[in-house]
Length: 245
Image (cartoon, rainbow, N blue to C red):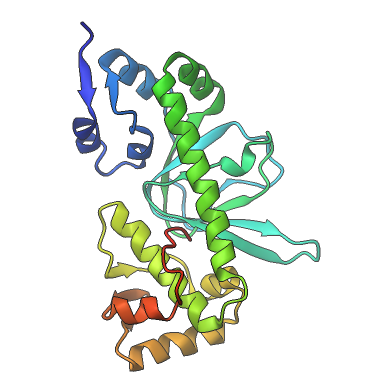
């Protein structure tokens, strides 16, 4: 009988690795786990401001964030850059290239490390390991669904509600990956947050000051402490189940 690797053991060994998201098949045989690890390419760390890939490039891999943070940017018809997503440790990047060409440019917000999963190798192994195929599909569907949900939640909301939605979303994402939900560093600048939320940077600064005055947040530069999560959630309105940003 083939020895099986329990999911808890896999998560332990991948505790600080974003690949835990792809280790979700409930049990992988020792042989399949070894095969999976063989297709993973370790990329050299990317510096702050470095580019993982550019819009228009051929999509050849998915990327799992091991450390750091990145942003996805698209260029509008009038030449303006629009941030459409932020990527944290434990998350996968590259689903914008499902049609063979990337439609986003992904840039590092800070020094970041990623693992590369070549699509050809991943597809071949997924055909041979059905559980891996199901999980890759599930992760892809979840990422796309969360991005769409975030855009819907931000649409037609007040500036205050947009910022609260963003902070609760980021908090939940970090919490689901074992980090603190109440105290964290913002990898992105206020200008980037404003760009993503469709607001002015001055508006973000004003709202953060207001949240501090109301005892909802404590902020020291990029260090954020959520003091009153219930009050912050109330700022969102009745739809508070967002988990992606």
